[in-house]
Length: 224
Image (tube, rainbow, N blue to C red; front, side):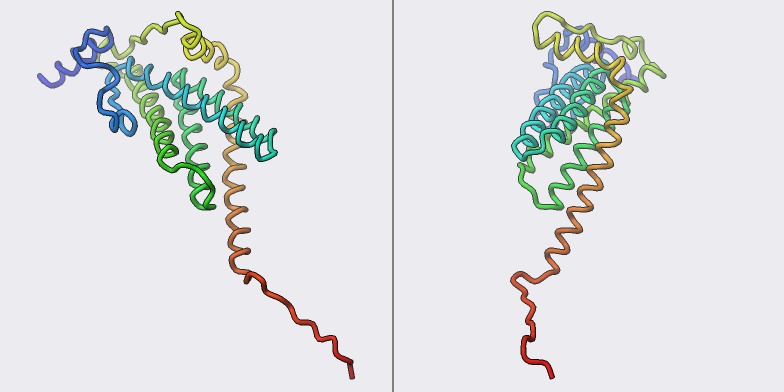
């Protein structure tokens, strides 16, 4: 019972900014791979972090695909990830799950096909996106079955700076209508990503099975 009360008090102090421990936690490893989610404040903080991660992934996808002479594919991918980031910022469980699935598919596909990329950075991005899945699920659970009134108190979002308006204001403005476009677009991108990985893997197996430099000898001698 004492443990339960202490947790509630600690969560309230963190939300009000009165906790002696800084938020987020000082443990970098835990912050990246399994951050503490104890209040709606934590959910909002992770949602903002997830929005920025999705935005960076969108920009990098557009740039890389453009360099590979596939600008339309890059634009399509960038739009999906950015809109997904807006959904993550607005605590959409479905959006968080789809964004995580998309990035996981691309990561697994890259590993299977042996494509370039930094596996450590990709793993960190993947875990940051998974943190949004955890956060949105916990937020929904707290809202549906609150243990304390603080479970239903959403923190006020700052609008003081340009980055605040971009990360806190724009997602709320766009997500209300763009979610109807995001889910079918994300579904199409996920199916195309899976199909592309399977197809390229089959082509790689065919090339491996065919001996390099194999030649066919033709008999050009006189026929009887």
